[in-house]
Length: 226
Ligand code: 5RP
Image (tube, rainbow, N blue to C red; front, side, top):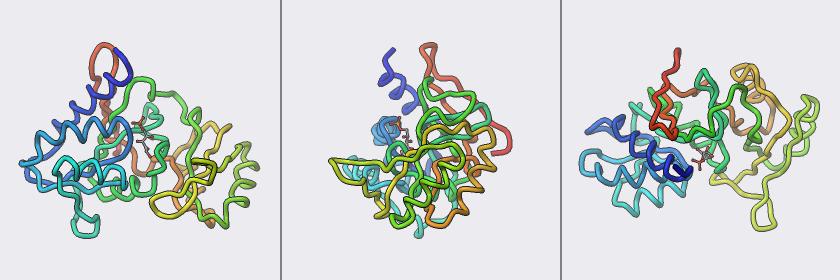
């Protein structure tokens, strides 16, 4: 099975967690796109979605699914999103699609995070995937030095020859060379650095369940304490 087929498999499997009559939280990325496409079949059974990016909003709306502002609604039952890496406790690296800030906001507004991922995303220790960090531009150089002091190398994410600008008008640093053995402590620490908008470690907003796409089918992994 190709990676794309595994993404389709978990995108469809996530439909079982959508609660009829309730608004669903929707993440961002190629795996979530498969979920959004599958969600179209249920669109008459839910009021709509809260979206984590302009890209997902456009896809949802194109399929006739209403998108609510996060401030218009209360707590959501479920948030469904992909990950760049997920460890054995449900901690994740996210932000490969530059949507980490809104993803964390919608995840925090939701009771359960359902992660959908192909098997390549499952790791023992987070950190092989470059860690995305959304930053206020004037702080980028100082934050780069702070990561260097921890042994990490931060690079400004570029797009079409210019620094990438997020949906929130900020920039992304991608940090390599870190092994995140204490994701919760690391997330808490980096969140305190002035100029950091969001660090792409999702340990405080970890997954409750991961639907992992494998050649043998979808494995359901459950995590304690989420
Ligand atoms: C976007 C994300 C995505 O969930 C993550 O990058 C995984 O994407 P994909 O499903 O395309 O592999 O965090 O900011």
